[in-house]
Length: 109
Picture 1 (cartoon, one colour):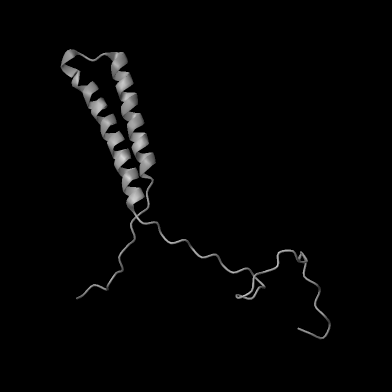
Picture 2 (cartoon, rainbow, N blue to C red):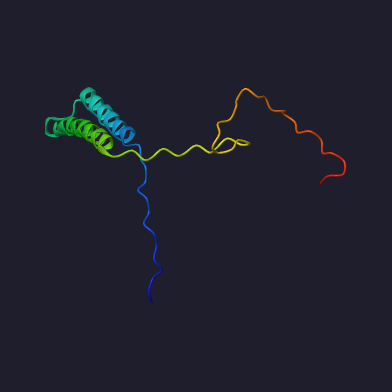
């Protein structure tokens, strides 16, 4: 039994800058807390873990922005034509339109 063909999904658009900034901020908070608390000498490596986390986040932020700049931008979506104007002639914006339509005439539908 064969599976029906499924079309490929588009990649999910994410905000990588915000993700890296939140991660850097959390590592920085953990570092400040550890510098205030002063862990035992056998747990000093926790401080260096926070420093490396901040450094990794800064590198990830730099790399993500560099990667985003290297990607081609999607084409701009075309603007829909203005109503009541022929497609080959520009619309005259100096004319004002009635906000309310005129009442229908008698004898017409």
